[in-house]
Length: 109
Image (cartoon, rainbow, N blue to C red; front, side, top):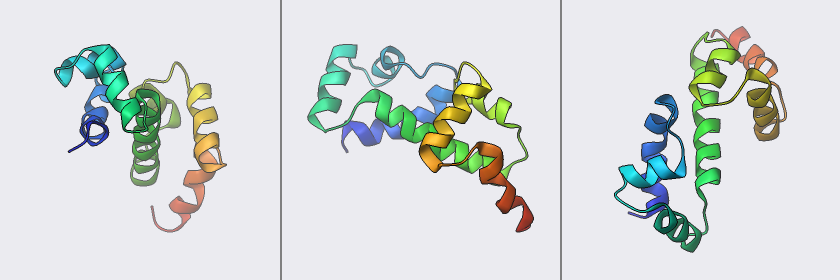
């Protein structure tokens, strides 16, 4: 299994514990920070890209399957504030979290 896959599996726990940093991830994987970054680069990836991908996946899951307010989702995913989360979600989906969630709610959510 490649390092990117290992990190993607670990990322939800890092995010919800507030430790989604390269240093914390490297420690959990038994690596040094520079080794983590070098190996991810060799795989064509980066810590920030994998964290962003994980945040996107978790955000869409929470928005689609819960009534958790966007501000709480932002905090759970380690964003400094709801505005930063909204900007990221706009980049991912082209819609604000509330706009993305609205049609899913009408379908029975």
